[in-house]
Image (cartoon, rainbow, N blue to C red):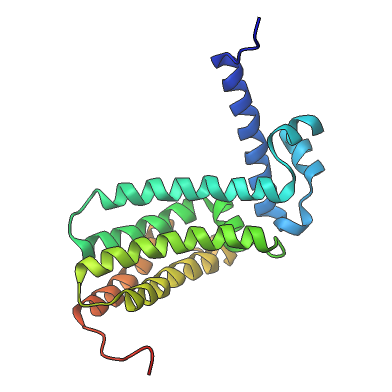
Length: 213
């Protein structure tokens, strides 16, 4: 009789993988990439070495998987934000606000994306950059709809600047002592107000400076 994977077995596999990922995210957020080891992850997940290597090839593989899970979570949240308005400038504001809220309310994920991946290597740097570049590309597309006179290069630069400011604000917020942090909503409002001012100003003006001069 051929071997069959039942729904119950599949569910158990998903739970084991999820348990390993959650343990890894917590450890990476607390200790950083370099100081976290596979044995630490295995111990925290209360599983065995064989189980770990059934799902992941090593520390960089599970770190990449954690980043990809965060990316999927952010993509879903940003799509939801987009659905709340058909006005491009309102969409830009909502996207920035939702991104900041997601990162501040999911601080472990934010830490591994923004602060705790030092020394993670070229592969993981590429994954991080792809996540941020995808979000910047989305902002650039909406900005171009707000003002079709803005060329692709300018739209990309403006979007990277606004997104970079949002990420840096969250990183600074994470580094503050908990008692000194503004609320997640207050930070999201501040960042989205600043981004809104910059994006509306950019969308209202046709770029006149050549990037190639």
